Length: 389
Image (cartoon, rainbow, N blue to C red):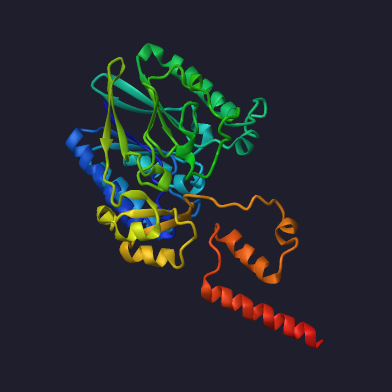
């Protein structure tokens, strides 16, 4: 059986205020072609299908079109809800979708009851673990200690292993689909995610939690990751943060043989608009010929000018129309060595205070001639008003 493991579609998400619907339609549109070209039998989407608990009509339409085209290409589909999804909305058509070869898991009560598909070697059981918020599920199993993600996934995997053991005589292979943060995942890859766990705490799910199954298809982390040969994240389908700019987009092609995973291969998906971080002084970014190649990319500009230039974003967007983010990180930080406002004004004239303030907020860049003249006029006017009282 050939499985394409994807995750974190985030249909409906914006990128720095821009819609990603057109770009995502292009990426999702590549999935049916991969199904045909690579003979894929099952496509997994491991959570965060939508970006919002209340997705728009356009988002539902894109999901419907995508699922239909994947099924027309010949693959069945297994998808679960993530922390961004509304389990009720995503799962409302579950009984009907199953009739069409689309298996949607959003209910924690179904953990331990597999979706069973078949190939020439027999049965493959897909155990689906939708996102488990401990506060929302512990009332169902009051006898269990469900304080955090580690507890919730430990409980789910215990039920799954019991089911796997019960099927041992039938030689059924097992695949777990889950949405969580597993130990070994790159914390930086979760930067653009709404957090579901506290990285570095007991809420991170230990890898040993997933022992006893043939393959674990994880979602939630937006960067590709191999935690073990049989435990992987594919990352998000689109780049949703400039921190992900150098991370590939795609999915894992997992080949299941008679005895479990026989091979894995990374399959790239289109990147409709690459992301790039450009660093330097404003005039350099606006004039360097080598940067012309990034004219149509998403651009995050990090300006190293000693003083933040005026109208920097407007000027950048004149060259890089998709410049979406701007930071000012001066190459040199100028300091006067004084720690308090009282120290800065002690013993200084009004003109000197204004001069020092400007140098402080402009990283050592004092007033130009016009500004100095303006300061002098303001101080003279102030003194004149004070003297007349």
